Image (cartoon, rainbow, N blue to C red):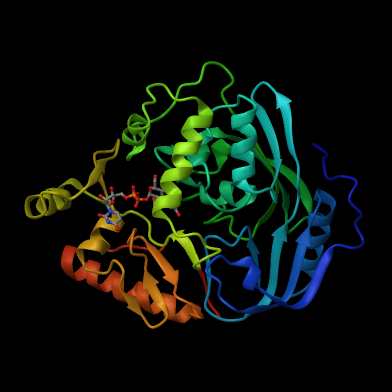
Length: 348
Ligand code: EPU
């Protein structure tokens, strides 16, 4: 595919009073004072210079699938529209930060590049995959990211960052912490396996689903399709009902806490982590608090997956936050566990 370097620099998308309705999958109807979209590294540098010269708050967004606006954003919203999926040989795939993540997975599966298939159908862009360390079905994108190319906002210089320096952990990275608003990510280079396909099917109901279809050793294509089928069944389509996937992160508790809970709730699902701690499933905790399928105002809890909050139509960000707070309070009271949103809540 083409790289973006030939894109013109002077007609970069830069719009005042811009509606963000199409830029957040929750479907919250808010505006920002200014919206900038860069299509090349050069435009990203130009954007960095604008951010430096304007003394205005800004946020960098991707596909808007992990965002909740609580009101109009009085500042600049920046988004990458850098395209390109370029195979560089030796398993390396260099992708523009504005590509749709799932298009990258589809490319990998059709080109015998493996280890991305469990992350099929996760909404969002390539740039956000590296910020958020997206994960599903026993896989995390950190395991296939090699380097990240970005423009450092302060200097407008182009830098290359090794994945090893990003302090990746469950849904976390330095880009979300100390490096927040420091870089405009322009490209992510993934390193995929090219040899024999070694499917990861242990997590969740993947193997059960494959078994039902009579598949013993799935191809990458079959594994991708299975993940897609499971996600479509469980997760609401944001084009039909506004949502941002899992609203909460799964909490991690120490052994003592886990053992006291396990005595009372013998059916409580959990995963033991390598450090001996236990990951408890927030969907189960919320479900057990009786929230599944319930609503507060125009904000609801999805009826097939309690971890997902939905916009029942015309909800404001504050209504979703109010629902989230009510759920958090109940989970804390019933189980003594604090759960935290995975979704990035943007204050007014
Ligand atoms: N459960 C319930 N009731 C519910 C939902 C879940 O009891 O309403 C229990 C069930 O025991 C179920 C278990 O919780 O088996 C786990 O649920 P699920 O397999 O749906 O996974 P999850 O832990 O809820 C995580 C990710 C998802 C990812 C799936 C599959 C987080 C916060 N979420 O969900 O990621 O797709 O695993 O691997 O880690 C996302 O980040 O937006 C997202 C959808």
